[in-house]
Image (cartoon, rainbow, N blue to C red; front, top):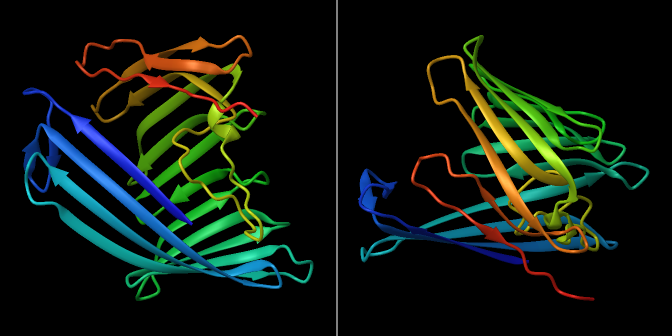
Length: 249
C-alpha cells in the first residue's frame, strides 16, 4: 500500500512558513508512505513501513527525510486481534486489544522507559493520554464525536477544547478503511474526525495562552452531504475553504 500526501503552503509577507529557523513564502511537503504486508492463512502478521518526506521551501534545495518501522500483529485463540507491536530505531509501541477493540497503547524508548500511555474506552476511543508531565482527557457524545479535550501540564490545567457538530454525515467516513486480511482500520487520506461535521471549536486557556471560539459554515447537497465548508473570518488574516467531490456508484 502506497499513500502519498502533498501539502502546499502559499504565504504572504506577513504570514510565512517557518522550517529549520527559516521563513518561506512557499513551502511544499510530499510524504510517501509505503507499507508492505506479509500474511499467514489470509491474516496480516507483519508490515514493513517506509516513509520518505521531501520538503522544499521557495527555490531552496529539497530536504529528504527517511524513516522505517516494523509492525507485528498477534491474535488470540478466537482469531481476534490481541496486540500490535511497532518497533523503530528509537522506540517501541505496544497496543493491546479487547474483543478486537483497542484498549491501550504504551510507547517506550530504547531503555524501556514509558514515554506515553494511552487508554481507550469500550468503543476504541481514546480516554486519556499521559506522559511524564502532561495529561490529555477526552470526552465523546453518544454518536462517537469528540466533545472535549482537557490538557493538564505538571498537574495544573493548561487549556480546554470543546467541539460541536451538525446532524449530517461526515463524508470522510465513506473513505474505505477496512481491507482484506488487515485486522484494524487503516487511515489513508482522512483528515477530520467524527461521525458528523464539526460546527465549532472553542479553546479556553488557563495559562494566558490564546483563547478562541471558531465557527464553521457548511453548504450541503440535496442528499445532505456537505458540498463545502469554511471557518467564519476571525480577523487572523488566514482563509481556508474545503470542497468535496463525490464519485457516483
